[in-house]
Image (cartoon, rainbow, N blue to C red):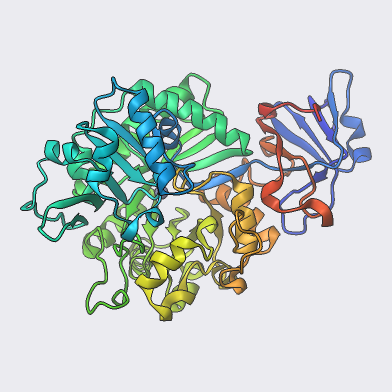
Length: 543
Ligand SMILES: [Zn+2]
């Protein structure tokens, strides 16, 4: 080391997140990159007259966290809408809606999200209940998983939904006995009303992105894959990148319009080309939504839902077209990012990648499948064989109200143990990448890492773990949210581990997670987050 460092962190626990993880207590940074990792005495020569030296006391330093499946702009915008995410129960939901409607008499529509299916009978709240809160105004409130919309009578009237409206092929209109819509729309049926919502403005998207950057840096997140990027979202990201305020590294998964075919690939290529090289934004991924969710029985299953003869859900994209699309996307160097929740959808994703490998040979596209909620154990070895990354959302792998009231009744006893098989996937050789699906659930990776290692909700830490054999070790869970996510985002040369030459994208935690008295992982605090060596959250040294 000949030149002095700009910054040296001393006396912490450095979690390098490399295989051997040899102990280190110091990191040196120059020009935004890591120039040394080791002991304080190793790095002493890097300290020059202008080097900022920060003495850590019991803190740990990790690579900045990554999130492999997240919706930041949408979540950021929700903060200014009817935000139901913090509501503990149905009465809190009703209360927030009523207060929001009263506080915003000027807004023609009540738009929001964040209620959860287990808060209402059968996951299907009624429109008249909503009318009693919003009056004659149209309202559109998505569930926290984005798969159900609770709408008011006025909203249905604007959309022209009546007893005779035909179900869309990829969704359901929940109905009363007389055939009238009850006010809950599932999956593809959301669009019936959504297409009438006032258009989101560019300024709203920019504000959503700014708010998301603030919140996510606060959790130590420095890179992510946005799991649904429409052209207008890409405009917002591009503006942030070109104007220098995109302080996270972002892989944009461009949205595959499932009502169209292969002709859209040319447009996706154009969007990819519109991103300037050398910035923090890339758009090399395409999101393919293969099915719905277990709770509303729209996830695509190999065997029927419990208590039905033939209710298996259905693929959202015709399997033959999907295979063709994945072969073509792979050939044109796009990464496929699948949403697959039911075991049949997961198998379809794997089959499509297998076909792409057969026709195009192996590639370094790092195709990945998100959610993986129900997987036939026979498919577990295929992730490693095909080089498909398992993109896991561990926060959901718990035995909670949603599991008891909605998931187990739908799956039946035989498939309970096919859910969230994360440790089995890892043992079968799959690479894991961690994600939150925020705003579906929290974006805090420390809470997600905790649940990955405990399979217990942080709100009920003495509960019994769900399928305890599927718990990940702390190392594997940390890796999924650092190196694993960097890998799926093709960022492993830049970040994901603490090694010389990588970007100084770092998070300083207020404790050493491995110390016996450290307490639950999710209780750890983020003291500071650095991107390219500069703080984007908190300050160094102000312990
Ligand atoms: Zn998602």
